[in-house]
Length: 272
Image (cartoon, rainbow, N blue to C red):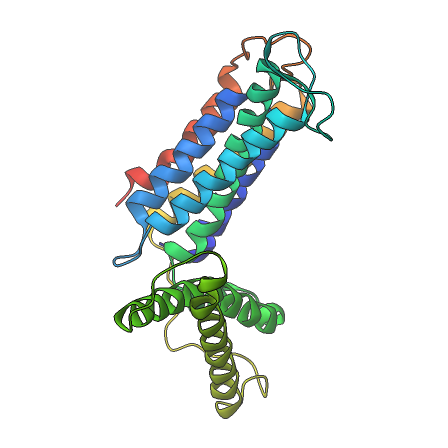
């Protein structure tokens, strides 16, 4: 998949998930992001850690909004008033709005991690304009930091377990976390030295091979651009339904125009 086409698709997902608070539209954008990630991911990539992190972030969003928002008429539970910030009624409206926020957050995160799980980081760097080559190199290095930290953590934990280490409270994890961080930092230093040895920054960036536009890439770019333009036009004309669960929970409205724009985000999963 051409990285430029993927970037346009990611921009469309971000716009459609953040441009409206309608839960129906956010469910569609999240479904499109997950479907494209599952279908188009690179061979050998692991989705479980990323999806687990997305699930935890979404769950915490719902929980925090439920505990901190005490507005709404349908009370689920009443916490004691002496609890700071938490005391008061826990409402169905607060949980519903937290779920709506979690859907938008999950769609944005899944679309973001698609940039590193569908194409290689160096492909993203090569697709940037020449003026942004150094920024792209820093971005590519940053995108590989978290995966390298995860691999280092798993390797150190397995090595410590082979030496008889067993987790016994939070303090015991320092035997794994500290070596993992140090190993990751050492890898970043080696990367910087390798870039310096190859005269990085001394001239314009070159590439052995560039990503070519294929017919499916053109279709993805065109449909994603159409979704962006169509959604912006719908916003300007007031055709994107607004939704607010407070003070009483209501069923979100559904409009065919923005829904059609969201359905266009599934196109990358249908193409070869």
